[in-house]
Length: 193
Image (tube, rainbow, N blue to C red; front, side, top):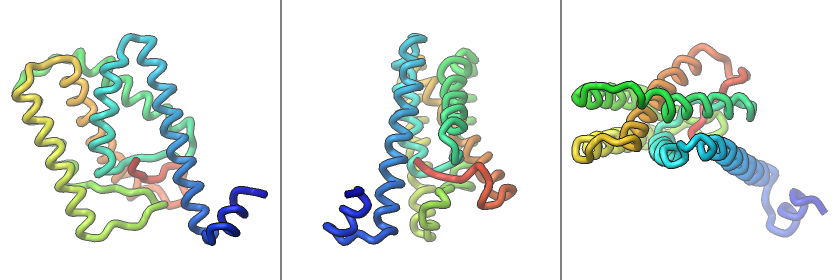
């Protein structure tokens, strides 16, 4: 007996509910596999702990702001890897004056306030309360990060998190532009993870 039939016959799930379950399981397995693949790379290049800091920062921010999502696994993996690679391995090599970090975080707050949340076309359109909540969450997350940067002496993990916030914010801006220019059927969809 197929799982679909089993869930339908034994638990009374509708085809729509079974589709939601399937989508959720596929999404989770897809994201976990990408995290493992990228994690292996960062282990081999001795950036694993920066990778963990980057993923933690990205997860906290992206769950409330959303952003770009590619329909195809390898496109999503390639963009995710590229953004994490430059955010972990390249951008932290750029030394900025300490006050500039805070100015740039203010810019991130503004971008997130203006454009968040951008949700998946597979999810319900958020209402006004949900939109305000997402904007407040992004504001609080970035503000708390700025306070942490102010209190904690600069180190590779703090700087990596900063660049991940920058990249996520500009990726959110790109998602907004793509959403306006690309029709619904295109290869890029908007999704929060």
